[in-house]
Structures are given as C-alpha cells and as structure tokens.
Image (cartoon, rainbow, N blue to C red):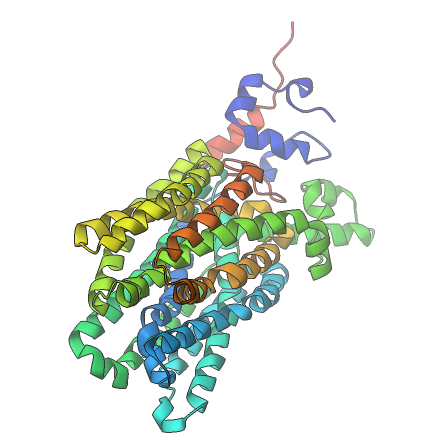
Length: 510
C-alpha cells in the first residue's frame, strides 16, 4: 500500500520524521496510531542506562584485570621457560576464555530473547564476579603444580562463558530503552562503562604495583585485584535486578500474546491493534531461524566486530605489555600512560554518541576505521621513539580513532537485527568475531613479533583489521534516528508522538 505523498502525508513531515515513514512501510495499515508509538520516560531511561553501564563496567573490570596482570600471571602460573614463553602462555590462557564466548552468547542470547533481557544480564553479572573471585583463590604453581594452570583455565572459561552474554545483552538493553533520535547518545554510555571498568582495573593494578613492588605482587599481591570482584559483583547484581524489562521486549511479548489469542479464535481485532511485523515475527527462539534468516546481518556483524575488537584489544589490553616487554617501560609507567589515554577517551566518548545521532553511524565508523588505516604506522613509530611526549602523541592518535568506534558501535550493532532475535543474533555474531579476532590479538601479535623480530607488527595487524572494517561499514545501512527493526517508533515526549501522528493528516482539499 502506498506511503508518503501517495497516502496524503506531508512531504515536509517525511523529511522531519523519516523513522515514521519507514515504520509505515512495514505495516499492513499505514495509519499510525498514538498507541503504536512508545513514549519513553527520560528518568527511567537514564536509570536503565546507568545500571546497564555500571554492570558493564564491573564485567570489564573483572576481564581487564587479567590483561594488566598478564606478565605477573605468566610468572605465577607458568614459571618454567623464558619470559617470552611465560608471556605467550599467559596470553594463550587469556585467549582460552574467548573459545567459549560463542557458546555463552548462544545460550544467553537465545534465553534473553525468550525470557527477557533483565534476568539474563543479572546471571552474566553473577557468573563473571564468581569466576574472577575464584581466580584470586587459586594456589600457586609451587603449591599444587599443574593443577594451578588447570584451575586458572577453568575459571577463565567461566569468565568467557559469562562475557558471551554481556555485550549483546547490555547493548540490546540500552538500544531498546532509548528513543530513536538519541540512541547513539545513550548507547555511548555502555562503552563509557567499558572504559570505566578498564580504568578501574588498570588503576588498581598500577597502585598495587607501586605500593607492593614486583616481588610482593608475584607472591600474593596479584590476588587482591581479583578478590575485589566479589563485592563488586554483588553491587552489580543488585543494580541489574532493580531494572524493569525493556519497552520493546514488553511490546513484543504483548504482540505474541495477542497473536496466540487470535489463533485460539478469541478475536482477530487484537492482532490488528499491534504492528503487523511484531505478530508475524513473534519469537521462535531457534538457532536455525537465526542462521537461516539473519545470516547476511550476522556476516556483517562479524566483520564489523572483528575490525573493532582487534583495534580495541590491541590498544586497551595489549599496549601495556607492548610498552613493558618491547620498549622496556616500567610496569607502572606503561599502565599510567594507558590510564591517561582511557580517561581522555571517557571524557570524549559521550560526545561521539550525539554526533552519530546527528550525522549518522556510518560517517563516524568510517572516520574511526580510516584513522586506524592511515595512522597506525605513524602512531607506532612515535611510540617506538620512547620519549613520553612521542608515546602520548602516538597513543592519542590511536585513541581518537578508537573512540569513534566505541561511541557508535553500541547503537549500530543492535540495529542490525529485529527485536525478536536481537539478543541472540547479536550475541552469536559478536562473540564468534571476538573469539576469532579479538581475544587472540595479544597472542597473535606477541607470536608474530617473536617470529619476525619486528616490533611494528601491532601497526600492520591493526591496519589490516581497519581495511576489513572499512569494507564492512560501506556495506551496512544507515540506521540513525530510525526505529529498531521489529519495534514501533520510540520518542522522547508525548508532543513528538502527537506530531508523528499529526504528520499523517492529509491537507484539506477545496
């Protein structure tokens, strides 16, 4: 059925409200009613975003601790062999957690689409905190021999399984709460939480290193960083349990109930009261459906996340080890440089989200990918000079490129999939890519440096990832200021909702 001018809609209104007209194209009846529009409560949205971001910060605090203690962990759990062998063993254990992330994403993602986002996110928080806390209790290699690295690997698997359901759920949660025109802004707080978690982890490790010294850190001090996860996990669990389910998921469940009632013969009128695409796409929650219907979006998600995670883990996880192991910086100095970089990114990132709302996701993502493509080699040449100003300049170049991706991805990725399979599809695509490209980045870079003898490998590796990312961004559709697929339009005020409905009123004809 015709929409736009053919349906008597104001052409100027079409320009002001493109999300409305895209929504109309997906409906049997192009007339949009006030009841079809989700009007968000700003206080509720902010509370949901804060809780999701804080929970995410605690998750990545737990995960980041391992990255910043990689050298110490290698000496404690893999004492045999050279320093390079210990470091490789430590990074291999880091990468092990990523092997089970697709499994965790599949399990938690499909549960999140069936049971709701809230319950699953609370479960992932609890598992991550438990896994991290238990690592702090593992006896050393000198005490129990090979059982020490075995237990370390086991609890790293618990961490990886938990993390598999974290990003897809948290980004879905915020995206489904936010109004269409501010999804980028609110989504940027998720990665603000990620940076806050990394900053907390790096700051704690830096303080412990400076306070205790290398000998005490290897003996017992490293445990303190892990044991902090226990009380933090309780706080995060409380915050997540206090949240309500997302409006989009509630709308979807209501549509499912109405469709089932109509099938039972009660009435077909109830079905027509909802968006047709909600009823037609009522959640079936099967992996077969995700892979058969969403495979194009999955491939695009894997490519985007692969480029994004490679650059992310290179800068935020591997760089302290690079500064210490390759450039022979003191452990604390390397962490302090990265700490300063991440604090600067935190100050910028919530400005990037609104830019993506205004100018679109693709321009911001293109800027970030192009930055890594062009600036990676010059940045690492500056870092290699070793002087503090040169290192800061190089890190700044990489950080500005990364923040364009960090501030945009959490709004761009959930929009790739419809509501009824969003959590599951995003978790599967994200974690397959993270396993193949993200978690292996420190291990692969360390191995390639050892094999080739060149310390410019991180620059070349990042450049290759950015090239893949540019192609992926070019293939994606722009989704800024548009309703999420499978969800009605979401607006910030009743006045905006009324304007959307009024925009359909035909001009009087005389």
